[in-house]
Amino acid sequence: MTLWMEYIGQYLAASSAGIGVWTATSTAPKTIYANNLPGSTASLIVLYPYAGRAPDWSMDGGVIRYPNLNIHVHSTASDGGYQKSIDIRSRLDHAHDFSYPTSTTAQIQFKIIQALGEPEYLGRDEIGRGYCVTNYAVEYTT
Amino acid sequence: MADEPLVIRIRGVDSLRANLRALMAAPHEFGQAAREWADDRMMESQAECPYDLENPHEDGTPHLRDTAMVEGPDMSGDGFSIRFSYDQSYAAVQHETPWYRHDWPTKWKFLEDPINRGIPRFAPAMIRRLELILQGVTERMEFTSPYAARRDYQRAQEAFASANRARIGHLGGRFV
Image (tube, rainbow over all chains, first blue to last red):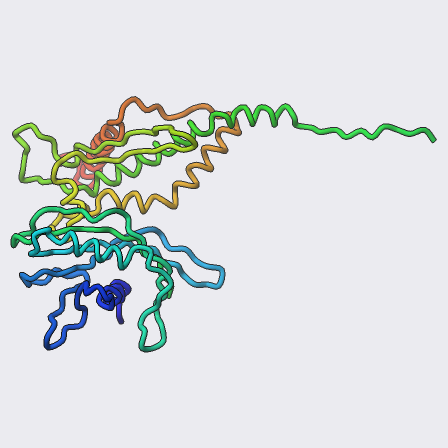
């Protein structure tokens, strides 16, 4: 079963701004990952879910969930991934009312995604790439 | 038949006046209630804050956990703000990096998660304070410094240690 943050990974990859690649092809390696920092030394994006707020129950028995998402950009670029983080924020902040998967019956409806702050540069990771972090509040129903 | 005057009696005007007078203190009281809520969150946060047991900090700098601070409420306009902080240069990196190894219950997001967990308890705390105002209950917790949460955390840890020693005594007999 595809997890909600994996759908957000697909949503980022679908951007025309060329944010990154979710499904690798013969010419384009994967650069967006979920909940897992791979051993690759290339520039990449990792989506980490974490506990947000308690869920709400709607009158029709549905559940509205409010997880948070922590997005790390590890980058060999001179700005340490700051511009990429801005591109991601432009794609995600206030993205609303979209569903996944798009090819079959939708399983998740994203109500809204909101940035909780500006991208923050945290320094260098263990292999010398710069890394930036931005947090998002996600609201979705299933 | 002579016209009789229409008399409407409104009871409880004195109580209404008293309640309205008491409610004038509501913004300040809500700020204090929020501070109590915030101190509870910070104590949860300190329990989850990473603590380097292998570094005794002999240079005198405090452990990250010991820099926890709650400040406020700062009343401004029609609202108030409360500030949570940890004061070490590596605090943000520890807070935002998921792949560092931590011993349970310490973790990343050691401040944001306890606050988010406590949000459902915020509105009930405000309602409870409103009830106390209207009931005329004036006994309140006193705040003396922004270090109150830190001090209370230390006090709580000492109480837990004492309770644990007592439990060990019960389990192991009086020679333990």
